[in-house]
Amino acid sequence: MTVIALLSVAPVVEGSMSREVAKAVAVLDDFDVAYETNPMGTVIETESMEELMAAATAAHNAVDGDRVSTFLKIDDKRTRSQRASEKVDAVERELGRPARSDES
Image 1 (cartoon, rainbow, N blue to C red):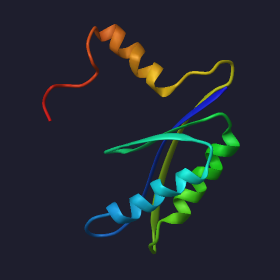
Image 2 (cartoon, helix red, strand yellow; image 1 turned 30 degrees about the vertical axis):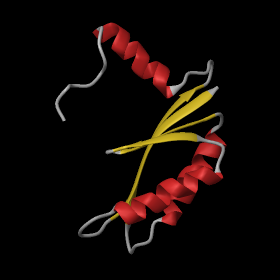
Image 3 (cartoon, rainbow, N blue to C red; image 1 turned 90 degrees about the vertical axis):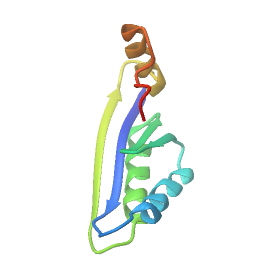
């Protein structure tokens, strides 16, 4: 079984959120998860829903502020294991190219 999730945790504040987002990402090291942060959130992979929920809760609680917004989208593969990178690889095979543009 593999659980893949997209987690986004941010304080509701004016200005930069990077310091608080970094706190949310840093706390993930305390859990048995693999993760990769991108501009829109952090993709997390783990073997159990329990570990995912514990990590997401800790990330949410790590952010300071009067108001914190957290988004969690879960893909719970119950019959087989699949890494997040395999999902991207499958799309790239269909495209016949990398799943990104050359423009930045």
